[in-house]
Each structure stands twice: as structure tokens, then as C-alpha cells.
Length: 103
Image (cartoon, rainbow, N blue to C red; front, side):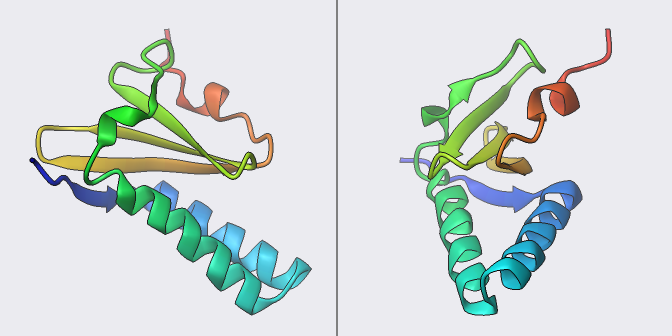
């Protein structure tokens, strides 16, 4: 079985950092650390079976989404060797508008 390499776009890394900071202020640094660790664990789990996410070729060819705890949507794309985490959107952010290719 192929194991895919997981990479994060700079945008996804910035989104994770912002989410961590928000949760650390609103709840606690420990809760933020644990929550972000769980999100990254979900992302890392795509290394074994990346096609389990929902295809979203309506937004961009090859794009997929996978939910996390009903509050987060993870956006990613795959190549034969890697899963690229493109974005991590929290609580109703308009990922569709941000991911749609310009016509």
C-alpha cells in the first residue's frame, strides 16, 4: 500500500497558527495545543487513504474536503506521492469562495 507524504501549504500553516492563537485566548493554551494536534492527526491520517475525502472538482480540479468535528473543513489535493493540505477552515468560513478558480 502506498503511503503518501503530507505537506502543508503556507496558507494552511497560517490558518492553523491563527486558530491556535484564537483558541489559546478564548479557552487556554493547553486546549489549543490539543485541538490543533487532533486536526493535524486527521491531516496525517490522509497518508494512508487520501481518497476518503469528498471530491470538490466543482471548486478546483482534484480538490477534496474532509470534515473534522463538525467545526473544521480540511481542504487538500493529492498527487501520486503526496497530500497537500491547502487550507484549514474553521466554523463557517467561506472556503468555497476562497477555493473556487476564477472563471
